Length: 510
Ligand code: HXC
Image 1: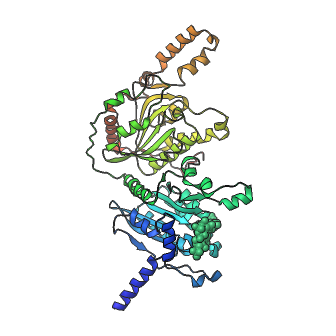
Image 2: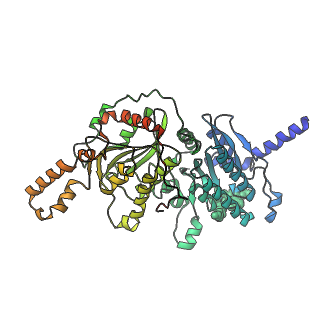
Image 3: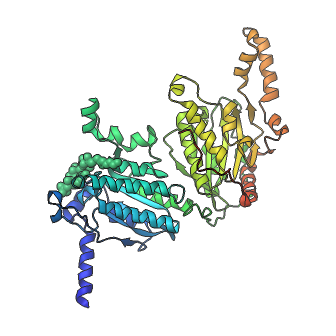
């Protein structure tokens, strides 16, 4: 009996060593942790239950039959984060560069299927060289099996991808199908084809970093939702993010006890809006003063900065915040902001997370760059997302709500449940200057008349009272009472029941 127990332990030990000591050292020299070290940091201590540790590839080509490493380049299993169940797979670069064999794909699909069955998030950690070249079409088949499960999981359980090394070819499309992607600065990169292929096909000279580093994807392409300094910071932040998310679409968002009472009022908010309507202020200040204990997890902070998206809590329960940011491009809605906002709103709606929207938006961004880039369709994504969302929606207009952007930003007309305005709100088709120049064009040049028209327009339209008279705004609230008013609205909306007409699925303007 003792023999067989020792034999099992020896086999386990071999599997734990992955590609061996030398390759583990190489991994550390590059500033990266190993697949197992990452899992250990991500999960609660001793909570990891590994599965398929002894799986090996079944290839006989190119001498592969002589190179079988138990686990085959991915560590899979489940564990807990602050006591809540999550499923994990972590690519092991020390084994064939983490490349995907058919056997490896079967391990990952098993994790995805199990997570969906019990209703728990899936976190994938990527550090791999793409398709296992020696396996040919079997590897491609394996990728497709994973992609299919990504799509099946979408909207059922949260899926998070963390890129912690190379991620190329087939490996990029699984993360792209998940809800959130994060990267580690300097040690990770993501692209469909690498610098050598780029040089051959387009004659462009690029480095790994300029083609697909964290600086590219977190700020320029918007492919990833955040970049962290190193493996440890990334994994710690993933623990924080998971705390905000429900396990599945069958659950309500998690509750966390808080000492931050909803009666807390913040008098500094009464002077947040500057006298000059063209002067910016930091909308993040409002969010941080509204959420429990100022704890806000921002999504894509470096991309589409004119809209802020992220998770906070009110009365201990998760809320998704979407807010125009006057500090960047005056908070205008452009292509990037519309895409970013739409995706976030849809995530919240999938997972029963109420949405609070803070509005200060001068409209959609004008210009050929935006129009040629398809602003009409991209802007419509955000409109579609808000309109179809059935979760509780609370909206607060702090200052500008102009034109189509007023409609889009969770207005009453798109089934906003509670729509408030601060007394500083201006709800109109456009700002006074633009409006006067159009409707009183004949008076341009006569400064006195223009000033009188502007004053009259401001008196009549640049306020929240016209909208409030029509019931488009439920109440005009004191800025200092924002947290309390939101909390009470969300309390009231806990029993909200609303569904859309039956359909196979809508056709969001992709
Ligand atoms: C098999 C691979 C491999 C792969 C790396 N290795 N990639 N084995 N298949 N795709 C092995 C190496 O042979 C090496 O083995 C070990 O992993 C580490 O690789 P190195 O090259 O030494 O590491 P490094 O210098 O850090 O370079 C990492 C890398 C490079 C940039 C990822 O390995 C690379 O370019 N790999 C190939 C990437 C690629 O073209 N993949 C196919 C993409 S096409 P030893 O034994 O020496 O440790 C694709 C199509 C799928 O994915 C489409 C589905 C839709």
